[in-house]
Image 1 (cartoon, helix red, strand yellow):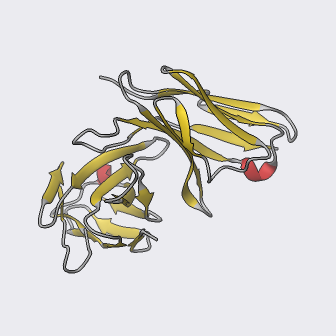
Image 2: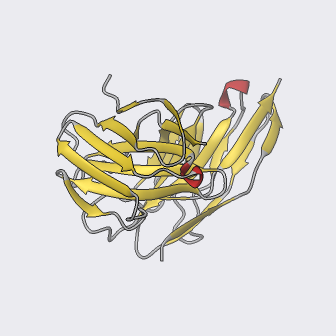
Length: 115
Length: 115
């Protein structure tokens, strides 16, 4: 079945460091791909998305490119801030999902940024 | 700013008691999802509703869990009787199936502790 694999955390970085969180997927056809972020004590928020191959999703300095050839959707940010500390979830909606937007999540990667 | 709301935010109860969690989806959304988040299992989809009809509850323990949508503005998740292993954060999410954007919007969650 469809699945998402993301790098284990925690990822610990200094402020202004470069961030990469790897995400790969297994799915039939062309799923939609998402990154959600969960700040402490809160629900998940959509960070960015991409719906077709070679699309780049971007938001708040984060970006990720839908790579069909490597089945990847790695999250990157050029300069992280302490306020980016959170858990990041990679997710997909299967191409053939029966007409509804079912999300399949990865396990989540915790990011800790220190001053 | 439309948001998914959930009540209560925190619930502590004793084993054997009934627990009811409520969710108000974003007005106009036709899909509602219930998720459970634990450290061990991550995010698990419990149930899915479309136009108030349950379409997928395969992730839900049938003997003690039940999910309903009495109307378009209210979704409920009940546990009876509750057990310590049900302790988790329960998230509700809503979305618009069939739209060009297949985004789910999450509520803040209900943190359940069963003693």
